[in-house]
Image (cartoon, rainbow over all chains, first blue to last red):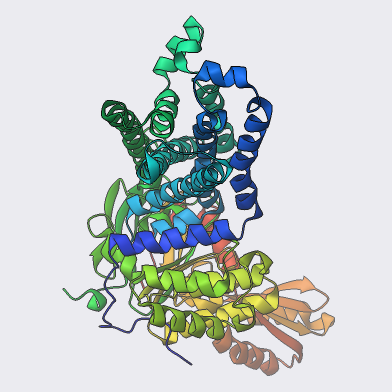
Length: 269
Length: 321
């Protein structure tokens, strides 16, 4: 029979670097997504929203006069923000591992605890980025002409990645705190006030007073306005800087929150 | 100190509480498992077995006491411990969308093997556990028995020197259980230290070199299966004679006539007692129609210990093998 196990004095292989561990766990989660039919349905959701919004409002010249831009270009960031819902998969993946007991298996291995939680967050963000990429490609095909060109489109995608990481971090934190898949799914309900208490269908100055206040406090506003600035207005360094600063802080905060909750969940007690 | 030269597992005064105001799940537990030994940890539900395994697998922190595995402290040197252990816990899961091959290969890579070595290791383990035919099938299609075999295969990926098996045959049919027993015996042949918990006392009897019985978080008795059986008394010798000779036979042999010629005797060593008793009866002209010898089972030991008899009468770990 072949020897399965260590004999006394056996030389153990070196533990792989954190990056290699991250790559292995990322590969596992990506493979899970590739074989799950819901992934492809989710990918279509933002495209569907883009088509519906454009079909409903795109033909109205009066509407375009109010918003001061081509409707498709104006609404494109909304579809990208819709894509952030896909980031919730991060929480779902981690809670699935928690419920199935696979997380315990990983915890008994000599691997980084941070990697265990970072992998689903990155997968969530990558899914958001992929979905945002598809939306941008469809927008360009349908006639969106970004005022800042390819570089601006690149920044739009970068912003969507950061927004996706923030949402994924939130999903991981709430999912682990709740401890079950249903509660993790329910926590994504926050998405709706985030989208509708924002200048989603009108510029902020066209909103009513109370909604303007709510929009000013809502980080989604800064994602939409920064993306619209890049797509419609052109280069505005201060707007881009402030948009990235706000979303960057949100991304960092959500990731640290997720890491803190994950550390508490996965650490020995 | 060279890790593999150290005792397999040394647990000394382990205390584990889940909440400060709760009674301890493990309360001053001490035992040692020698390198290459299969040690069976038995106890009723809630006795602290799984908590103990949780601490040994570096999943839980002890409140007091010390635990060393393969020479490393589970608190201060947790990663060194993790590199040397293989864990097949009851509640550990797998991702059901993975295949058996990809799951094992991934674990091998996480333990530091290169891609080629990891693939080879997965192929080898799947063959060893008779899962080659299912290597490329998704785990959601695996039966319970296949899953348990896969669990053990995963536990062995890193060629561990210490393996924890938490009720490895629960829910398996008798054939799968026998196959799992064979695997565990092979581990012993390979010099692996095995800590086994089980609900099946005959499993501990068949596999474990030594057995510790825990109750309410403390070790109550410890020893080989034979030593433990001797704790609950000797063997029971039953001799059947002509009913007319029953009372005389009981008097002669020093036993009890149960009626219809059936005479029973409590004897210390059944094997040695049989010729002595038969000789005594024969000398008195009494013929034995049949003789049977019943030895205490581990079941009897377990019931005595967990039932409180030995706990109160004899204290913990009085059989130090």
